[in-house]
Image (cartoon, each protein chain N blue to C red):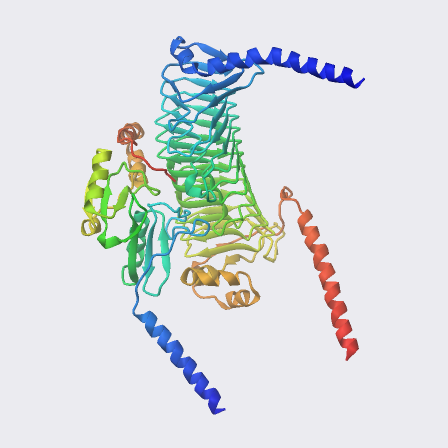
Length: 189
Length: 445
């Protein structure tokens, strides 16, 4: 009987030890599994490409997003209190990097899965060279991204109000919108 | 006699090689200069190609019509990194060509940048996107097949390797009729593209059959989708019509559904047949949609409403689903006159509609939102019991005020029921075996 209680004590100690060890949390990004991962916000399958982002909550849940704009939307809906860490992927290498350490290139015409047009880079130089290469876009640090407006390439709500005012005006407007071009690389989805 | 046969064989072979060889060589010669033929052709002319294999890439900068001589096979083979065919002029027509472009690359197999282009009866084998349309309006793609043919060395093909079958960006008023798209990424993908008509196409083994992103006025009618992750994905869309489509067996992926609406408003989802999917109709953050006359049979979940408001859901039939409906945080939806086979109503006045309403319990969906792991207990007896206990804020649930007592006559099942009979037979066998074993055990005591 005594032996048993000691055993139980030992087990409790072990569990406590293990959990306290986990307490010193270091958040690590999980690999994307195309078979099962879907964007927590928009329901689309998350592809194993550099547009994917990831947020780890303080209780260790890994939430995956197909576009950094969707991750922003999650923070708008749920606040940042439960956010343990945020990860984005370098556009050239696909390596996971910390959200706050990355640099970002933004242009409305960049094609990203949910059309937010924000692309992450490991360092300032590669972001700048991408912008130069595309011939359009602006460079943002993570801090500057915090005040970003997160507009999608085509705002459906604007479209509707426009339509209510004047149908013909609407078609003109949408043409103008088209002229913004679609020269950038990458697969849409 | 044997020698005679040999001689006859030899003669036949010789005759064949004489008649075929010059023809082949002829075709080979032409393979080099299809681009030259096109360059020489006058604008507006029709070029009839004799049998043979022609080499890509091909650039079409003037209005021409390319087609094979009747009954002959014309293939275009592209091994470059460029599109096999790039169409930059308006009103170009391509008919009856086979296009083989199996290399993995970013450029699509066919790239259309002109208006009024007609593609008819093409067979496209691609290792990239099948057809991309960029600022291409009033085009028509019909009776064309597009299939994935790319090979990735030393690892299985991932979804992100594949391109879409037909991929539209800023392209309006196009028509897609009678095409078959298989094993690609998305079947038809539309972004910032309005008023496109998608009719009588067949989508199989794709990620999403039809995928709308930021579109308006799309019409998706009489299509068939089978074994895709999702049949029709309607996202950030306005005024879309999805009618008379059949989506079956979208169930092989953990996130599968027949039709998904996300941020879709003012669409009409009418008379579709959705069978054997994980979720039949998935509606999230969508408003003002008309969901009418659809049949959802043999899905795990018939209809799922998440943060969906002000939708009208009428005259649908939910038959043989594991759970007819699930809802969470979905208010002001007008549900009326649907048939739910899991619901037992009472019809006092004999009008065929129940006086008791059918309320959709939000318990399970709320639970799995907080703890996704509980999905394991989908429809388990304990979960159903707990769901029955949960009654809070009932006035905010989605409720069918007058559910139908009986299904309408038109209910049909497409997926063969044979498997069901099989499992019934196996089940009966196992049951009798179990009874026998218990009997033996009891006897021994």
